[in-house]
Amino acid sequence: MKLPQLFMFTFLLLSFANVQKKTIGIHRFYDIKSCKIKFRFLKGAQSGEKIFVFDNWGNVEKEEITTINDTTIMKKGFSSVSDSAIDFTIPAKLDQLIIRTPQFIYTINLDQNVGYKQKNNSSNILEQMDSNSSMIIGKDTILGKPCQVLEIEHSMKIWLWNKIALKKQLLQKIDGMQMEESAIEVDEHYKIDPNEFGIPKGVIIK
Image (cartoon, rainbow, N blue to C red; front, side):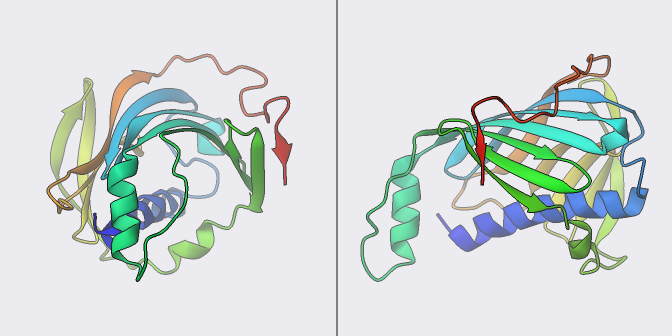
């Protein structure tokens, strides 16, 4: 496992989300007001599913993420970049909740009922991206949704529907493993619960 490449994939995912918000503007991040999308992802030694819900044109969002870790591969990967064996515990399964508001980002470990709050300064990263970082390379359809296909930084492909990324794919495989995230369900008529973006009861925010 080449960890630097794995971190690069994660950075590109975050950077693209930020570029998306910079490009679209302050209020309407997406072209539909609300939606619920279920994704399946594969990121090297990690796989799992994510439920993404947003409202108010993307001003509030949440992600419920279940990650399955291949602990054997991950330990080998970390040990390969260290002079000595690393003794630490990697959970085989991790349940997380991420809530984003215009002011804050909450990252919550649902297994431990503990979360962390930080200011939402994602727009600061946008200044690092130039106008040549992405280009439209074609069109495609995912789950019946017409998408524009973009290439980002010559490293990643994005399938956009209503300015929402329904699929993200790293162009280069890592140790023969494909890195991608793809929508498997889209609900344009999902009814937003009044407490949809609230902190779950019993969770301690630090």
